[in-house]
Image (cartoon, rainbow, N blue to C red; front, side, top):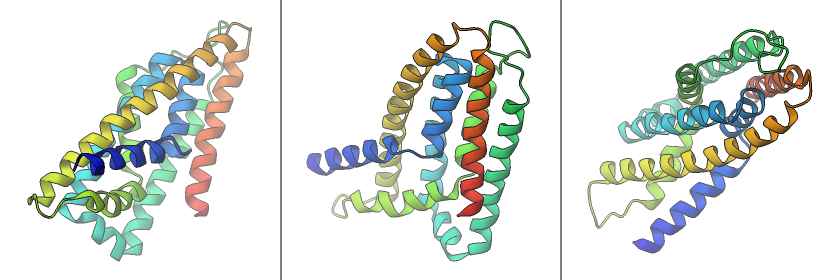
Length: 204
């Protein structure tokens, strides 16, 4: 049982580190707005895992898998949301640079946006419904509760990994922002990352 749990944790860390929409958005947020904002985004994306775990336990993911239209509707809604975020950031005039500009988003708002962005990614739900049952022990019983606890473990490790990404990206952004007008280009970089993710979702 302990070996299975260690294997689950190792695979979960590997999946979380692999470049994807969540960690790239954490990276973009840290670069543009700083370490604390990146950590707020990291905690938001990690918290969204509970939503997907609940859907997997309830079997909603099976419905998404059986209905391409429902899957596409949620996927395109997520892409539209990312495009909206990209427009907001690209319209910024260097809000994080010494020259001033519009005030940065509050941490609570960043957290909420990150949770919503994670919830609008149906691929995470499908991943959970395929991944979690592989580590359910049939001899223990209560597979729904086992899946729930596995989802919580995944959420915790995701929060740790995302926060580490935010920490180092925030440090890099802090060094870059010491130069005038770099904040403007950090905003543009963050906006382009959001736009790239949205286009990739639509393209897929």
